Length: 316
Image 1 (cartoon, one colour):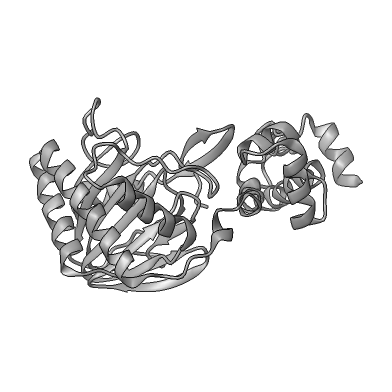
Image 2 (cartoon, helix red, strand yellow):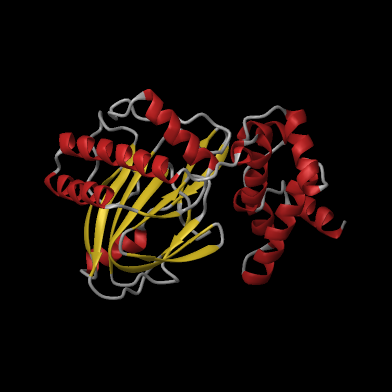
C-alpha cells in the first residue's frame, strides 16, 4: 500500500482510499488531459452536495504519451468501474497482473487492492466511476442508489454476481462504451441530470452483460470467514489503531467468539497474539528502514503503549 493515502472509517476499521494525487499533479503539469468530478480527495470540482450522494468519483483521463506516474496499490470507498477507450494500460488486482486493451472493463470491490500502471501509465484514455454502496467487507449488505432506474430484480441479480464472482477484467460491448463516452460529456458540461441518466444506463448495460455471460458464482466469497481473512491480511496497514478483541470483531461485523474462532482457524493464534505479531513485524521493518527514527516513535506508531512495553514483547 502506498503511503500518504486518504483514510476512511467504517465500523471501527480504518481503510485507505486512493487520492489520485499523481494523476492530479500530471494534469497540473499538462501531461494529461483530465475531466473529473469528485468528493473528498478525489480529483476534479466537487460533485453536487445534496444529490448523487453515492457517487464518489467520475472522470476521464487522456494521456497522449507514456507517463512518468502511476496509481500505486490502493482501495476505493466503493465499487469502481473503469473502461479503457484507447491505448493499453497495465493493471493489477489482488496480486494478479493484466494488460488492459481497448474495450476492456474493470470491476473492483472496496476490499480489492489494485494498481494502475506498472509502475507508470502508458498512453491511454481511461474512464472511471466509483459508487459507494455502503459496503466495505464481503459479508455486508449492498445498498444501491435509489436514483438508479434499475428494477429491484435487476439490482438483486447484479449484486449477486458482483458479490460472488470477483473477476476483475471483462470485455465490454459498444453499449457500455457509449455510456462511458456520454458520461464523459456530461461531466464536462456539469449536467447532473445527464450524469444520473448515463450512470443508470451503464448499470443496466452492465447487468445485461453479466447476465449474458453467466459467470460462475462462489458463495464463499461473501462469507464471514473470508471477511475475517481479508481483515487479518490488512491488519499490518493499521497496527497503530488501539485494537482489542471487541473492536477487531466489530470491524468484521461479528461477535467476539466467532471472530476469535475464525482467527484461530486462519492463523492458529488467538487474535491478540496475531495482532502483536503484526505489530512486531511492522516495527522490525521500520527499525531497519528508518534508522534515524527513535525506538519510542517506532513503538508508538505500531500500537505499543510505550518503548518499554515494546522492548519486553520484542525480547520475548
